[in-house]
Image (cartoon, rainbow, N blue to C red; front, side, top):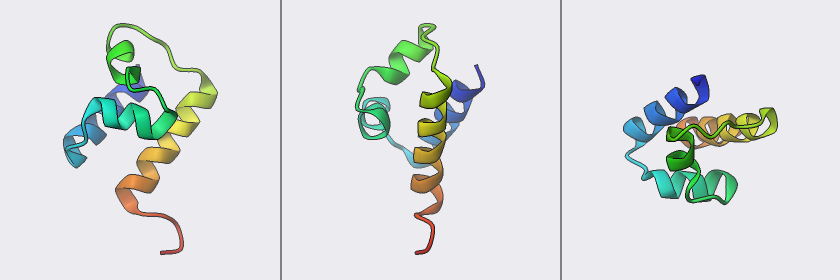
Length: 63
């Protein structure tokens, strides 16, 4: 699952805890743990996760 690899890379780069990531990105603190156990993300959730990682990693657009 490509999105999980992106999330794992983001967590390593930022030092963010998996529960914090899930809570901040989609209000689900179990998200990363569930995905590691096979949970699939919908296309809409993938867009939300990618947007969250982009904003957090590179800063908000226009700053």
